[in-house]
Image 1 (cartoon, rainbow, N blue to C red):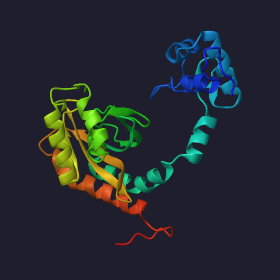
Image 2 (image 1 turned 30 degrees about the vertical axis):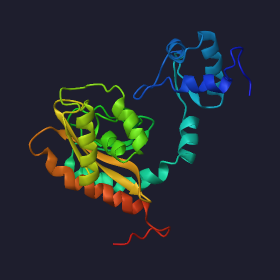
Image 3 (image 1 turned 90 degrees about the horizontal axis):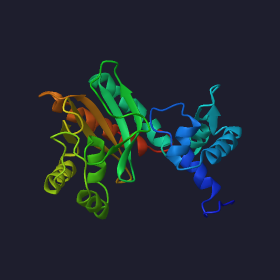
Image 4 (image 1 turned 180 degrees about the vertical axis):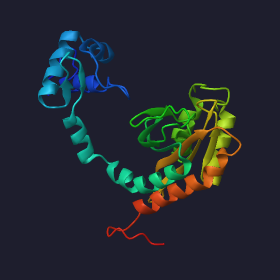
Length: 255
């Protein structure tokens, strides 16, 4: 593989360009991409031209750039999340029909929760989540569920690291966080009132496959005295997804 004078491969630079796009962004200028990726504008422009030729990036008439369909196609074709999302969609849709706010599916990626799906009502409460978006583990209901079932060494690493306080209710103290994680393992779900936004509450439960937590199902709804009543419904949705993931090849789910 060709390498630059500083030893960095061309592929590494191309990856930095692609990763410069943030969730919710579509078209970006070459100068913005160059700045975010740490590349000279001429270098970024040359790489963008090559990636456009292969369909991994696309150019607009004003020369702005967006991610190409070929990139999405390649990712979707081999993604390990396909079976998870396919198994999750019917229970997620059923849960969303009840809650009529936000219903989400997230997985652990690094020290963040990555959201694979989000179903939302037009007039739903404020929510920072979006598809392909990320949130901190300690402040989101999905993140806390995933953290609670992560390996002990990983938990300790997250618990002992600096944690951002998003609201006055965000759990940042080690003792509080340990108590929340223990309760999740005991109860099978978590209720997070105002952890990310003072007007919103999150509820999440784990999705299992082969005795391992594969994902988290969550809802985000207005913070109120009645919000916690949705915990059983979230646990049921997570359980249904777990059963669908564990179903035999013929698709029959044992009752």
